[in-house]
Image 1 (cartoon, rainbow, N blue to C red):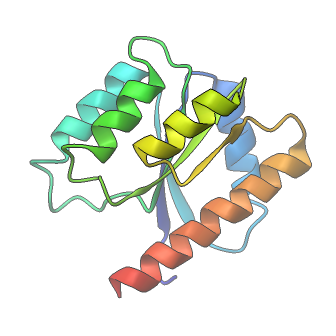
Image 2: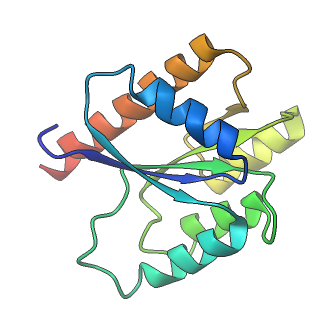
Length: 142
């Protein structure tokens, strides 16, 4: 990738954002991380994309499903339904993953759905998957 990968992280826990940034730093690719702290900010971002066509879009959206102000599932639904971001891959994370929730999140269009990592090695592995998705997205757009 010649230009830095733009990664949007929707997460209310600053510690998780810091862990993801640390994990991404373990990979060779350059990235630009944009952070939104809650579901309301994410919904505003999704709506704004209709008018910001010149703004570079993220190659992946990392979305916490347990957000304040607006549920992450509603944000995912908004991204994948009537949105200029519908084609962007979403990595959905949750503190608790259940089989029924997994079916719903996959049905809504998330590329990856899993429990938030508990160990640094797992964060680094997740960061590798995120960067692989960005490489795929970049290959498709060039």
